[in-house]
Image 1: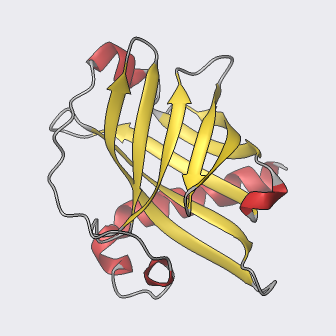
Image 2: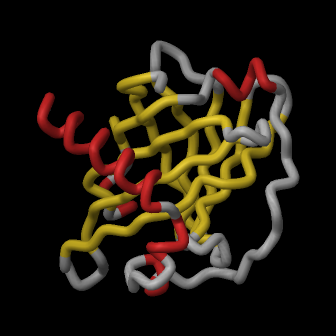
Length: 163
């Protein structure tokens, strides 16, 4: 399990350095269809609330129907004060072939006092792939709903670091 965590941290760090534009040429996210999406970050979350979400996360639970076997997220606050992040899912497609895809966590919308809606966008920030609805972390876990392909699945991510 420790090597999985180290591997996840290394992947998230590498992806953050390379940036989303390099992945625009990859065919992973382009296989996923969704509406085109081209807006600058417009939702600023209260900084004290935003800071609760900063960190690196590993998938703890998600129903098999989502066809995601493992996942990792990295969330931070940018120099402009907006939350952003990156993630990667590993799973199987409908034919049973193993697949992985990278996405940007963007447009963090604070919903009420303790909830957040996060858009999952293609690496080029042009295709909306889904949404993540979560509450504030409790015992280093964020839980809520993952929306993919018009289906919602209960999901829990465990924070492995706050950096």
